[in-house]
Amino acid sequence: VFARFAPWWIMLPLSLLRAGKDNPMLVELKNGETYNGILVNCDIWMNLSLRDVVCTSRDGDKFWKIPECYIRGNNIKYLRVPDEVIDKVVEEPVKKERNDRFQGRGRGRGGPGGGGRGGGGRGDG
Image 1 (cartoon, rainbow, N blue to C red):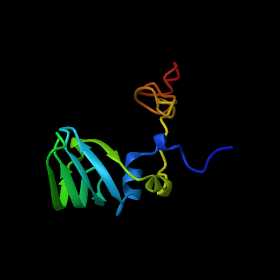
Image 2 (cartoon, rainbow, N blue to C red; image 1 turned 180 degrees about the vertical axis):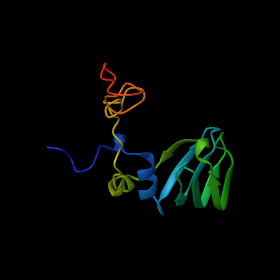
Image 3 (cartoon, one colour; image 1 turned 45 degrees about the vertical axis):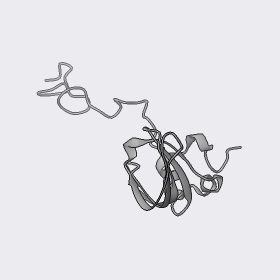
């Protein structure tokens, strides 16, 4: 029996982020700073907009409360979202890797069985 949804470790990150809109989340950056806030928006590069944010320094000894912030996706180390967000995820179809890489392609020039100029390529020309 297959479950209706894929396990949480197979979910696509963007599906998870879209489901997490208007929910609290914790974002840790590669430099060690953390941002706790409400997700306002995200894009395909995982850039995030947060509101009502508490920023914590990498040492954990300084805190800033800021009304909103923008985080560039390539600076993100990890995200923590509430469990109820995981339950709301709408699965996006995952593109399957094709094992038949060359199926449907001709070889060289000409049509599917062609061998280039003239005829079928097997002495037919």
